[in-house]
Image (cartoon, rainbow, N blue to C red; front, side, top):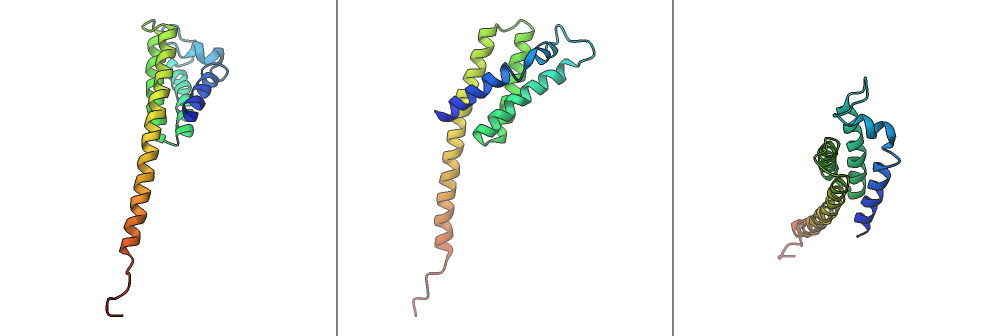
Length: 131
């Protein structure tokens, strides 16, 4: 739950004060700013979101997934194919998915570490039966 709340808070920071007016306008391929490639602005904005998710979940793969999904979602919104509320619902839904995935990854790592230590202990010789 804590991870989800952190990602939602990071989303609010990345989507509002960190995006600012420049990125909000520049990322729109339908009305690009002169001299600013829209895809660079959209990519930068999406990477900010991906970095936040990657740091909070401690999973670079989830950070990359967030970057990709965020860019696609924002591009659809900028082109009028999603409403603002649909855009935000998708972003929040992704954070829930990333939180669940991060918990599963964490559980898998803990299980692997536990089984790895048991395997390591069984590999240590326990002494010779003839001693």
